Length: 314
Image 1 (cartoon, rainbow, N blue to C red):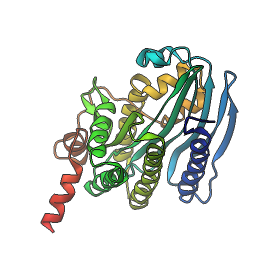
Image 2 (tube, rainbow, N blue to C red):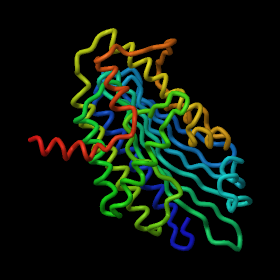
Image 3 (spheres, rainbow, N blue to C red):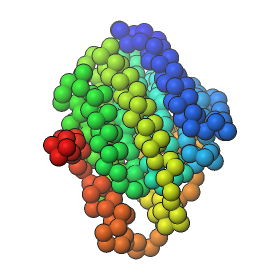
């Protein structure tokens, strides 16, 4: 579809290419495993392609989902947030990625890039891009956090110096669990309703974000996947994964939209870790790595400033 310069087909083609690219990069860590590919159709309109890698040497579960959902009316959550969308048909497409490594020292990563366009006879289309990426470490490595945020900054910089601080703050605020008073991880980028650069530059920006995720995450996995660990680290990983589940089921807007729009439940919930646990009244031991995670990492922090301090020390 190309309406008033909005080339939906080109966006969707790039989303498909991105899914293939991410699967190739993740799959390179698992020479003995293959993605289970599940192509599906949505009775109300559209469909997608969910790919899941499970029980690998590096990834306990990794999912890469492409979807293109269509409909004549939006779910209540969307039209309530944007009243001008009422009565419009829509196309919502995107790629979602969640990787849960087996090793507790390797962080969980999430990325999403999406495009939305709604139409009504006699009115111009309403469209926007959204997405971002965030990192959820179980054990703290400043090197990884700095590299992650440097990649986020570099993805944004060609499109305006104000984008990274805006979208970094938005990510810190979005991936926050109020009932726990902590962030889900170290953040990254999050943005929605993004159309301020016009279609072509906004599309270029979303491509930059998608590639930055790939370039940032794979080296971190390579550094951490063979780190020695024991039962203590595994137990803590499963406990922290519980926070991931809490956020996705209680607060995540994408999950809510998918379920309310009668999306495919298996694909929507592919982001869940295969195993998680909850402990009553857990407190980390003082001065432990687990305590450092809580004290220094599960709160908004200027990671680019940390990089500058590190350079000054060297």
